[in-house]
Image (tube, rainbow, N blue to C red; front, side, top):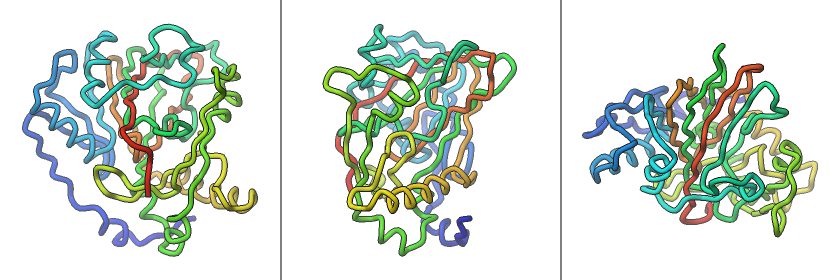
Length: 293
């Protein structure tokens, strides 16, 4: 059980200015998640729209754009406003468009992508800075939501001694875990990516500290014994898994696009809709620097 005084956490979060000149923004929670209307993502963004989307994304970490009608080129064009598109480590084995990761689950699926807390592809030396999932088919009987967790707030919920202990440490992130364990996939040429990143990172734009380990890719904390590392990571994962206050919930409708900041969030695609199907396509944006203290 994690006990923290509400005032100690709230003091770290200034009230966010919710006014954006070119967008209509409806928040999902006071600290993470916002629904955005008044913009057509199939059209080229003006500089003013791109500025407002970027600021809202930094402010709210997860943006949800309902009622969008995009083809693949339009989806990718929107993402390219933030940088070069990422090629998933397993994409060469999937075939098709290397910049599009298909997220498809049917009654015959043995697993579903993202069914567990994770940050996208932290096994890469420079993980994606953001991802955009465009969902066009949702389960007919409901379900299939995605939870997003605020890693700024997760960091703030740690005690000061725990922050001081974790701050200088690094952890190893290995792609073999999810790709072999869950997806039963064949290693790509050169093997699975493996990288070390700080346990506590600083966001390059907001300047805020955040928790940067996730059960999807993090295998151990460097320099600790295996049992010590497991105990610390299990404690941090329990914090994420047992603290609904960290979350916003995206309730997908067909033709909805979500854009999340991969540097300060984790997400969990809830597989609660078998035997129904869900279909989406994800584009991720290459990061411009590795995570740092």
